[in-house]
Image (tube, rainbow, N blue to C red; front, side, top):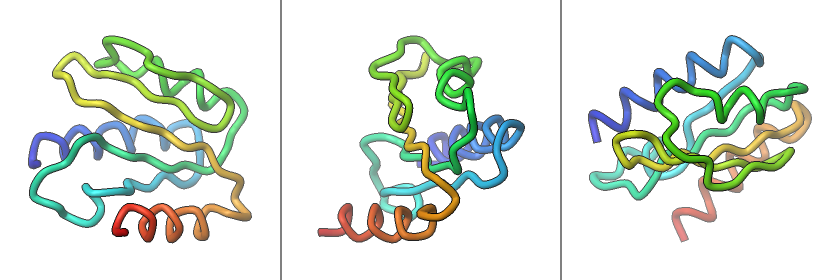
Length: 102
C-alpha cells in the first residue's frame, strides 16, 4: 500500500496542474490493507482525460472516455479516473465511497 499511495499522490499532483480539485477515492482513501486499483476523481476540465492518459508511468490505456478512463502503469497498478463537474464532485465522492464499502 505505501507504494500505491505514493503513486496516487504523484498522480494527484500531476492532474492538479490541469484542474482545481483532485481526490483519491476507493480503498486507498479508506486506508485498506490491500487494494485492487487506485481510484481518482477530479473536477472536469477540457482535455483532462487526454492529459490523464499521458502520465509518465502509463504502460497501457485500458479505457478512455470523456468522463471515465483507466490505465495500467509500468508496475502493473491500475488507475481508474472519473471526471466530474464541480457541482457534483462532493456527491460523487460520497457515493463512490459508499458503493465501495457495500
